[in-house]
Length: 196
Image (cartoon, rainbow, N blue to C red; front, side, top):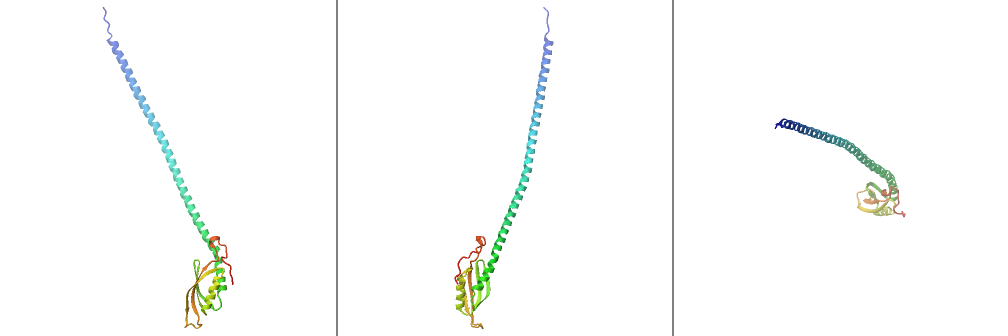
């Protein structure tokens, strides 16, 4: 019987399978490396894109913060200007008040009295003067009480000075100023009717 040697064929088949296996493993390794590389490139491009968007957003936020600061500065300047305008308007409305007040003082001071000092503190008026007699002071107080620009006279001090050559009395009197209503737009509104 003839003998057939199958060993070389099997050895060659093993070499071919081994080579195919190594090629398949190498191909899989290369494919894995390519896949990982592509994944890394894709993820890095996504990260770069997101970083670019974040940087753009940060720049826009900085611009918006600067605009908000400008708007707040403008609002503060506007409030300061409005406050100044209100002060100026109040002063403008109050300007004729002193003229009317002095005119009313001239009308209320009776003969025999002269004023030495007038001091206004808010809506209070303090007057110092000299009178020939205490009845002149009471007449002055009645005139103030019936005035349309002053009210609520209060006598602080009356001193009779015997050393004075005129023989008069020095007095200190306070009164409320009521002629102008500044809160009501500055219009001159008479609070009470004068009855002289």
